[in-house]
Length: 259
Image 1 (spheres, helix red, strand yellow):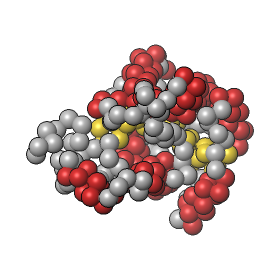
Image 2 (cartoon, helix red, strand yellow; image 1 turned 90 degrees about the vertical axis):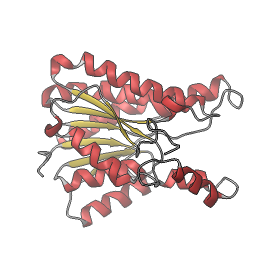
Image 3 (cartoon, helix red, strand yellow; image 1 turned 90 degrees about the horizontal axis):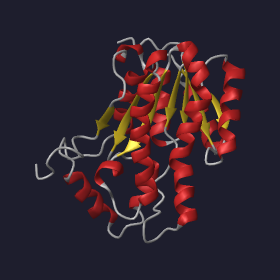
Image 4 (tube, helix red, strand yellow; image 1 turned 180 degrees about the vertical axis):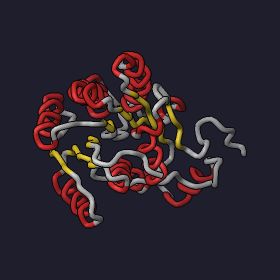
């Protein structure tokens, strides 16, 4: 199926690893040009090289989006290099474990900057280009906003904000025909997830317990499954879909886990 993304320039924040990298690779398979915005140049270059070996085209910008002042210049550089922007994938962030009891004001605010504030600033910076291209925005969010997790107030609050902004922007941008959607991720196997579970006692036992709570297939969601939904939501083939929170989670959040 042709998703009509050939030649489209799509920014992917945190696009050098994990879900972001999966989305970048999926975009390349559809003929789009992902532009990775990430703070680690080595990871960026590795992903760009991988994409080029596949015959695709990819750009990258080194920027730490936790620094609010870095967002607009990153977008300006992309416009200078590529001449247009057709979509934005807000993805960068991490479950940083800033809890109610374990955190403080400074850590909580830092968590919001790491996981939410740059979503707003990147969207604001790309908006003039998206108005021209009638592009779309995709926010990657987490089940923590729905289910809670414990010990991660900053991340949970940020994801609640991501979901709310998805709906708010979908309304505000209706006159410009800019669609805004979100993918809600639950248990997806990524390098960060692997790093987290390795810190737990008996990680294999814990992983098996998590899988057993995922109704569809008793398995983790793959990065590719997130990425496949992402490219569809970015494409013209989802032309009447906006303001939606799409759960790609094997039924984890909404189905009875006793199943």
